[in-house]
Length: 623
Image 1 (cartoon, rainbow, N blue to C red):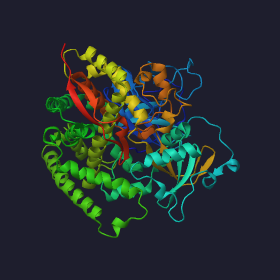
Image 2: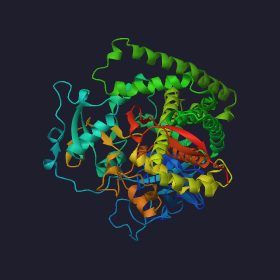
Image 3: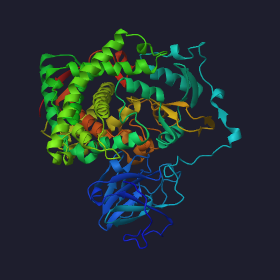
Image 4: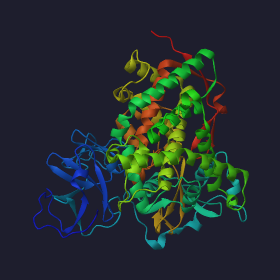
């Protein structure tokens, strides 16, 4: 699609900026650029976003200046291009930011009068498609530089070997010093002791722990060109047949991301809301029965019933009904794969490749069972779309969209890619949202005044309703959203992320050779008293004030969904689910924890999960 042609002598849609010398490239067909959704494309190393404004097709830099998110995953609403990550909005005609302060997120002058504006590119819409002229000096990845910093001379750079870190043991390094039940806490303890860059050796691999928001922001923004997921992580995910968009790199990631970004775009998530309501209604009935019997509920398991049903319906259009029927074999197989991931990632040696251990046999059995469930659905959808090609233009679930999608060369995705992304959707949707919502319940049990504030807000908005029956109701619950943000600040489900340098990088005055591994700690900056007032306190109100919330969302500080071009595309769906569940729970019940707060613990798995959040529900009296 991205063929190169000579520039036309007289462009039919000239930019209102002074013309630049450069090369014209075909970016899209005219039908791909609509007035209701942005279209993303990468040309000559640049991420671009195309939108159809009243005056014609426009092309802008495709990366949000806030935290580097891809604008192609957002929406076009009321003449604005809206980023799906934090809601930054830009005029579709000019690219100028609307509804926010005119300053860079990294600027030291927050009241600057100079507006933030997306860079515009000259567009020519012809019979054979939409063409964009790029400056001849453009370079791959040039439009998303990290925040300006003092760049040390190469001779002054330190080497990784010069960094401080815990003393290791012969041969195994620091591997056996890591608490496997809560690995993230071990790494956080070392980072507190040794500083923003800490050297460790884990599973025979030297890595650097990063605990500095500015450096974290650099790493996120330089993906995927500068940094990638680690090759060891990729190898483990390949073995577990979950090597999808989460771990894909390069052209493979670019083609797969379109599948997931489209399925999880805000407009599609909003259309899915009636189904979310139906599933929440089932959970409410279950909880009413539990309250009447005086049952003690494990909140993590309760929330996972809901998220499993949501993701299986969204991904496959199938009603698993885990809420009413309880955990079934599918959920058990997913948990087997989840448990294998960290064990293999941090293992000293891949013994499962050499010996048929009991754990390896369980994983093979689980994957075979998951194939037996997913593969027939893939083949069924392929057959349906072959008989009725119009179904490709109106997919009813994520799997249908993935089967209908085509790679850059026009070929279909393989069954292996479809299976991997289906599993990634199931695993990611089941674990992460359930854990964050359960952590929120735990934090609210420790903060009764916050629980009362949330309850009062929900009562005022919902009135006699038992559920937020429209998204507009959820949008009127700012304190409930603040509870979600504050929970993810204190208890992010991904407190550590592993990356590998594609090329030599200079971070924090240290030289990172190509292939170096960095572990980004996402929680520590957000709970640092030097960066956040009352950092250890659970105070959702800190997110209500716009200026304070913006300071918390500044680059590298609060990144529970990641940041940069590869920010988690499921952020919107997760926040909708969390608000729906919390508003439903506290509208209908008083929540009483069973056991002491200290009995609740953090556990490392595919995500950081709560253990021991057990509650009794008391029905609230109606006014």
